Image (cartoon, rainbow, N blue to C red; front, side):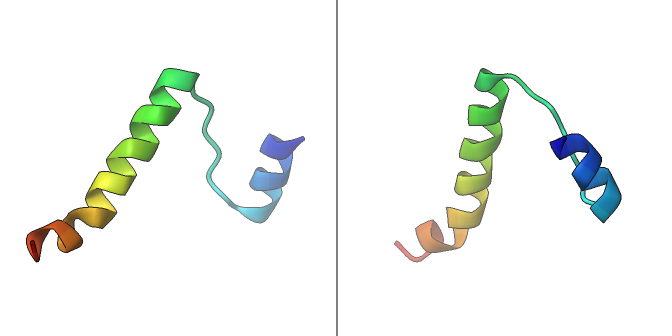
Length: 40
């Protein structure tokens, strides 16, 4: 259902396992937080 809706809207859809989803989330938070760490 979600996959089809994403396809209809032209939104990327990806399936992953629990460990990889945590890895992706932590990497993203690290990357977006980098400018804040540079000021320390």
